[in-house]
Length: 461
Image 1 (cartoon, helix red, strand yellow):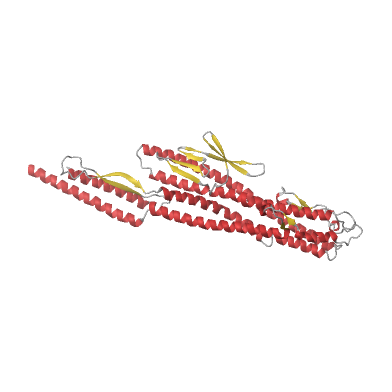
Image 2: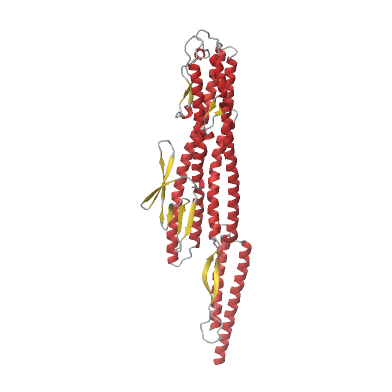
C-alpha cells in the first residue's frame, strides 16, 4: 500500500532529521563542531500510470555545513596571528631593558664621560681617577647585561623553536592518521563528520605554528604543505621537520618526506616558527651585533688613547677595557692590571698633571661608530643607543599594529566560519519543531492507513 509506505518513509526521514538536529543541539558548545542536516529527497513514482503520486521521501545524505573559503581564511589568519603574537614578548623585553634608566647604555656613557670631565679638574687626583675606573666598570656591566639579555633571548628562541617543530611534527602525524581513518570510514559508508572536524582543528593548530597550504583531495584525504611548497602531509604520510645547529650558534630547518630531504628557508614561513625566525634574523641578531660593535669600537678608542699616554708614576699607560665579542655576559670587562695611577691621562712622561690624553678621552663622546643595524653611515657614539632604541621601538610598534590587525582578521574569520558551520540554537529549535511535526503527521497517516486497511478487510469479510 503506497499510503503506508509513504508515511513510513516520511517517519523514518523525520527521525533521521531529528537525530541530526539533536546532534547539533548536543554540540552547541563544542569547539570546532560543524553542524549537520539531513538532506531530504522525494522518491519518484515507480508505478506506471498518472495516478501514482510517488514513493515518499528518502534521506540522500547528511549535509555537513562546511565552506572551504571560510576554512582557508581561518588557517591563513591563524598563521598571521601566530607570527606576530610570538614575536611581541621578545620585542617588549629588549625594548624595556634598552630604555630603562638603570640599564641603558646612554646613561652609562654619560656617567663615564662625566667622570672623565671631573678628573680634568685635577688629573693627578687618585679619588677622581678611581671614579673614572668605577664608572668604566659600571658602563662595561651595562654592555654585558644587555648582551646577556639578548643571549638569553637567543637561547629562548632556540628552545621555543625546537618545541614548535616538535608540535608541528606531532600535528602533521595526527592529520595523516585522520586522513587514513576518514578514507576507511568513507569506504565503509560511515559518517566522517566528527573525524573531519577533528582534522580541521588539527589543521588550524598547525597553521598557527607555521604557514600552510591546504588542499582537500577527492578521496576525502587532505594534503598540507608549507607556504614555500614543501609537503607536510600527503594522504596517510607525514613529513618530519628537524633542527640543525650551525657552528655560529644559529639553527636551520630540514624537512624529510618519503625519500626526499629539503632545507627550509625562513622567508615567508609564517606562523610562530616564521615569527621566531624573522625576529632573530631581522631584529635580535643585528641588534646584538651592533651592541658588540659599539663596545668594541669604544674600548678600542679608549685603550688606544690611554696606551699612548702616561700615568702619575711616569709609567706608560695601559688599556682600561678588555673586549671579548664571544664573552657573553663578560663581553666587556676592565683590564685586570688597571689602577688609578696607571691611567695614561698625560702626554708628557715628566708632567703627571698634563691632561692632553684625558682631553682626547673626553672628546670620544663625539666618536663616530659604524653599526651594522644602522647601515654603513657612521653615527656619534652618544647618539648610537638612541638610534638603536628608536629602530627597536619602530619595529615593536609595527609588530603591535600587525598583531592588532591579525587579531581582528582572525576574529572576523571565526565569525564567518560560525555563521556557516556553527550551531545556531534558534535555528535548531525551529528545526526540532518542524521535524517533530513531520514525524507526528506521518504517524497519523500510518494510523489512517491502518484504519483503511482494517475497514477494507471488514468489508471483504
